[in-house]
Amino acid sequence: MEVIGIIAEYNPFHTGHAHQISASRKLLGPNCAVVTVMSGCWIQQADCAIADKWTRARLALLGGADLVLELPTLWATASAERFAQGAVSLLASAGIITTLSFGSECGCAQDLARVAELLDGEEYRPRLVEQLDRGLSFPAARQEAVRQLDPALAPLLDGANNTLGIEYIRALHALGSKIRPMTIPRQGAAHNSLVDQDTVSFVSATQLRLALRSGDWKAAAPFLLPGEGELIQAGGGPSRLSLVERAMLARLRTMRAEDWAKLPDSGQAEGLPRRLERAASQATSLEEFFTLAKTKRYTHARLRRLALWAWLGVSAEDFPAAPPYLRVLGFNETGRELLKQMKETASLPILTKPAHARDLDAAGEKLFRLEARCTDLYDLCLEQIPAPGREWTTGPVILLP
Image 1: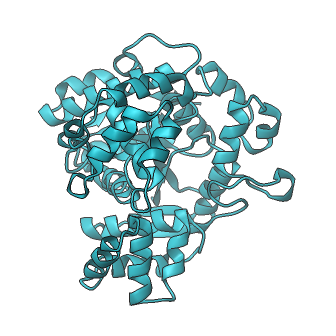
Image 2 (image 1 turned 120 degrees about the horizontal axis):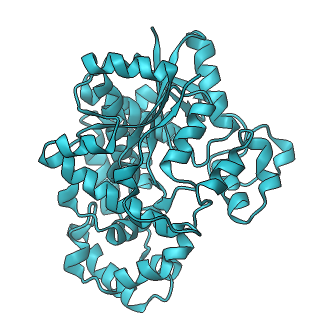
């Protein structure tokens, strides 16, 4: 049986995501199974997910997925490269995935594979370093390095979905995986864009989050699953990072340069930790902190990740080389059959109950405990704060006939 792997945040799940799943099945056959690796409670934009991971897993199942696995916070909140490495390694570790399907602006997996080949080639790295030494941010330096190698391919790096697709392909190559990459052209509004919703078939998740957090459920409803708004509200959402901003700012004000240097991607060699210490000592809001710390080289996205990791208590030493387990967030009847197969094919332990975490090796249990802390801190972003410890008491969502 063909098994499609999809990497997503579903923040929130919307009609564009449902389109990707259905379009993938049309290409590979209606009886295909779909396995999703989904970010947990924290997402790549260094923000809290609009709803907790169990609510979003339920919505993914209702929207066409069969099995939902968790991408742990360390990778879910990382750069595109590390995000892709973690998610692809989980799909590969399952041992059942035949095709990786992802959305892209260009709609051509072959073109994205050509960019991936350039990024992994010997001529790329010296050009990248040269552009970084000029003071360019990493995304700008990378695009300029690719432009020097093949001007026709450089524009592909303008698209956020293209960029992730390229990193997925690179991760597959690095693993020597036989999983085939396949891309579905992105439809409707561009990533992170805000548009007149009457003019497009699909709007961005960014626009939907703004609508939900402002209480405009009517505007969001046409692009959500039936009943999705009610499920998000029942789960305590929509979440808001603003509810913990003072707590985050308090943490940043207590950090010295040596504390910043312990974070992943801290920029210690570039002198970034001292700049962050100075910014935190002056800022009266998170946005002011980002403004004070930002330069042409240090992007807003990177600074947001560092601030979030600081608050979550994450250090560079916490990062394993790859996720050490497969955490099941939800499944349906087909997903249950996939899990039976994975007992024979998976190269990592499969956690279908929180108690299974106690049987992990030291590295796995350490990561699970970190994930539990991240969930407890996420819950502070909800209007009604749940009791701590949900990670240890909440099992997967099961949707059976």
